[in-house]
Amino acid sequence: MLNLNIDPSLAAQEGKLKRSQLIKAEALKQGFDLVGIARPQISEEENSFFDRWLSSGFAGSMQYISKNSDKRKNPYLILPSVKSVLCFGLNYYTKESTGPISNYAWGDDYHDVFLKKLNNFSLFLKSEFASHIETKEYVDTGPLLERSLAAQAGLGWIGKNTCLINKNQGSYFFLGEILTNLELAFDSPATDHCGSCTACLDACPTQAFTQSGILDSNKCISYLTIEYREEEFPEDLKDKMGHHFYGCDICQQACPWNSKAQPCDEKSFYPRDDFENPDLRKWQSMTEEEFHKKFRNSPMKRAKHKGLLRNIQRLIIKKPKVA
Ligand code: SF4
Ligand code: SF4
Image 1: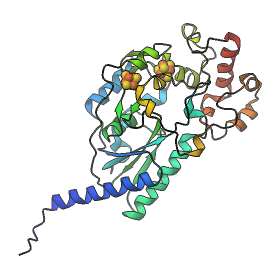
Image 2: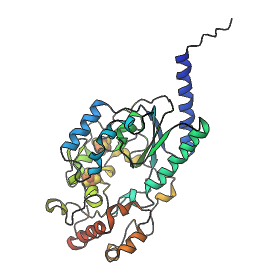
Image 3: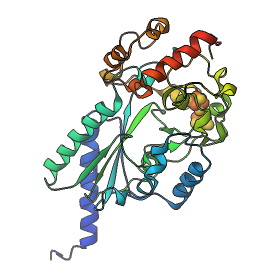
Image 4: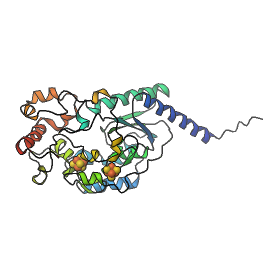
């Protein structure tokens, strides 16, 4: 005789699993390189690490990080109905950067490109499951501890260089998330594969890591060339900043897991005109109007006209040795 006493919790679990599998398959079909699902919770350990990092002043002048720290530590404050966090990785690697601009900044602004993909994916979720489901999309555009969530979702582990590293793809990918009230099956976190390696810590020219996994942004070339707003760089750092004009890839280039990096499929991340090896003397005379034209839809507009001119000036006046 047919037993109709189906355990409802088992059926619900099966439903979550099926939905999750379908979502992951579709994500890969839509061109995301990594996808996983996290519980909408940040662990106590992660939260207290974040608090200690902030109170040590390691965020430098990036006040937007501390401004919404409650939300960063608690996704329910962003979307009260949240049940799952879909975490995505989008590869941006085109080739190793040897010039003064970080690889990620050669093409179009990833915020726009990635967010558009996530918005489209939310449309897919609504058409597939129910038009009234709630979603909230982020690409480094809101208060979310996205690396912690991505690690929980199994996309990779947080390496000693503070980047999220995937065993098969390295660390050259952007992270994005969709918070949703869909009930899904959570993935297991990836294991740590840094082992006894210290290549990234040893390679950093400004000794920006106070210890493994802890970055003092005040000393980081990426922070200094992008976020730092003072007219002059700190005296003790400017000669250590090498040829870097916008960003720095050294601690990623040093990482053995990045030997696995493959060129990305996203054409808009490939270098624009002269971005890979710019003639900075030409860029030096750029007016504010020309700046806005040249860096429209580029992540480099983040440094602002004034910041880019300051960065050029350090290189042209000091002519430092190539790092
Ligand atoms: S990005 Fe460059 S300066 Fe910043 S921590 Fe990495 S190696 Fe050091
Ligand atoms: S270089 Fe070594 S220690 Fe640093 S993140 Fe990569 S594997 Fe980890």
